[in-house]
View 1 (tube, rainbow, N blue to C red):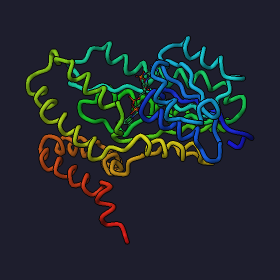
View 2 (cartoon, rainbow, N blue to C red):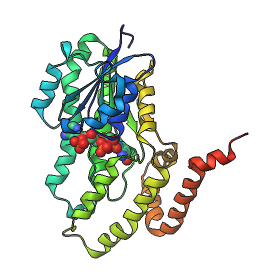
View 3 (cartoon, rainbow, N blue to C red):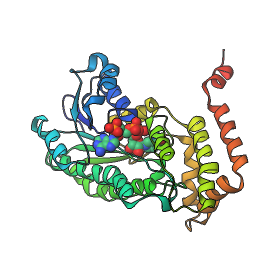
View 4 (cartoon, rainbow, N blue to C red):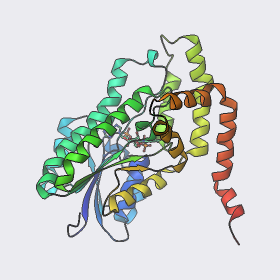
Length: 316
Ligand SMILES: NC(=O)c1ccc[n+]([C@@H]2O[C@H](COP(=O)([O-])OP(=O)(O)OC[C@H]3O[C@@H](n4cnc5c(N)ncnc54)[C@H](OP(=O)(O)O)[C@@H]3O)[C@@H](O)[C@H]2O)c1
């Protein structure tokens, strides 16, 4: 990975959240190791990135249009980069989808796969020939803990991230001989606009075709639990971006990076019992049998991990 001069990093989905923070952290790198091409599908949303980037804008950070769902947009963006050179690709753009599966149209499901899976694959296809030719490169994919463990009412989103995990697992082996690394980053909940957008979608839906019992579970059990999990266990986009900077800066980049250690035991259940029985039953019990206990544990975790508590126990 040791080419001279700063490495060119192209990031998708930089209008908000993790992509925005990552673009800024890389562009403000004290060692000036990176030239960042921060892309977004709607340039009218560029102001927040411009403001956050400060003096890095126009020096180590440039902003370009890129919609991962459009072949033409990807070609145009890559065509504008000198020698089409991208040393590090960060596939960050993504959309969520929650709700009872009966109420979601196939068109909505395809939109998730178009962005989270085919969008990322399209980007890989665009940068791979150059990386192979130079015999160096790094592809980083913003997956999720839901790429390792399915979560109730997130069926299609989890499937799109599982698809990405399988894709990368296969690709990483082929690319090693070209010195091109592949890394999956798997955050738990992150406090960005992501959850807000999901809740807006939910508030607009009437969940056609869903039976009353499932709808009640979704609205009265899942949604409140999800909100508590985000507020108790959610990371900041800055923290996730920091983890990605480390992955990009590593001499031997890791294949998996779970950014939230609280999720490690939950994703390990499958390895403990390869039949899958343990993880299915544990998740069912956590949400439906011990819902109250689960929420209490989440609150306790929230107290243990909150900053004010850490300050109180900090040595003088
Ligand atoms: N937040 C979480 O809890 C969480 C947890 C695990 C993994 N992740 C993953 O982290 C990544 C970033 O999410 P985030 O939390 O930062 O959410 P976010 O703030 O909603 O950011 C998502 C970004 O993706 C962009 N995007 C969507 N469709 C696109 C397309 N077709 N072409 C280009 N850009 C597109 C959005 O642009 P617009 O502004 O134009 O919509 C936005 O910039 C996603 O892949 C997500 O799946 C998030």
